[in-house]
Image 1 (cartoon, rainbow, N blue to C red):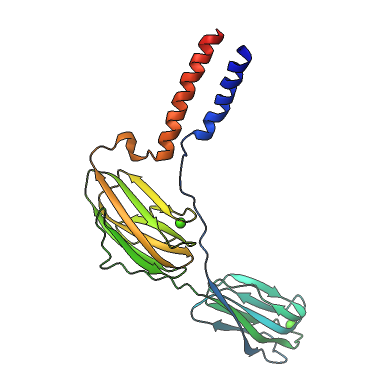
Image 2 (spheres, protein in one colour):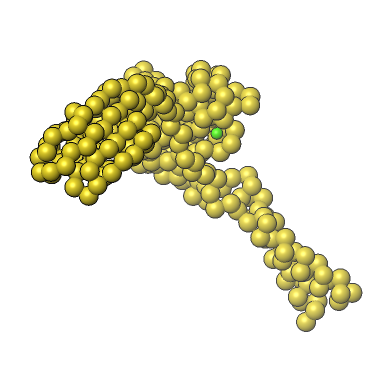
Length: 286
Ligand SMILES: [Ca+2]
Ligand SMILES: [Ca+2]
């Protein structure tokens, strides 16, 4: 008899933590950036041979590029005394080539331009440098947002259609004294659409006041939202199709601070039962 009650008491103790209310139902996920890489031929030659006391810069620019690098098919400058420098878009030195190289890429300049410089001293001249290619990357993001006209009213379900990585921005006006804002998103089957919210202006993937990025559908609850115009973005993380979005605003007091979900509630009931059972068991043991 003692053995069984003790066994059940231990079992309940072990079980209870599993049913503890979840501390958070959102996860943060890194944002993918679509990038288009292009390699193209580009001809840039120093004088062959170069002169003594020579110092010249060449800047290569690709508008719209997020980074760029150059390919030297040959570099041949006097060791120690003559230099081929490469600088990034901001003027920071990337490379300092001295001596002989063939088939060499520079480091990446994280901007739309890159600068090459040849600087020589007062004696001994060699062949110089030759560039035959550049490689650059441009962002290929297709995300567009439209804000005007996409107004929401509490309890009214709206819908929209998105392709992967597209987004819609809606807004709803929240008055002072709002106890809770609940945002419910239902995406197309097999897709993963997410929610981003921001007070006062349209959210982005990187700038927002809250986000809900569960796999599949999302239900987000914000207790006591500050009053103002809340912008809510629906983002098609993966898949495409039609979604439904509903925002519920509750005014007045919401029991339990507005954060009690069905699972939380069930967990608390189970915890309560566990405590009562444990007390009964303890009273029998002692
Ligand atoms: Ca020299
Ligand atoms: Ca989701």
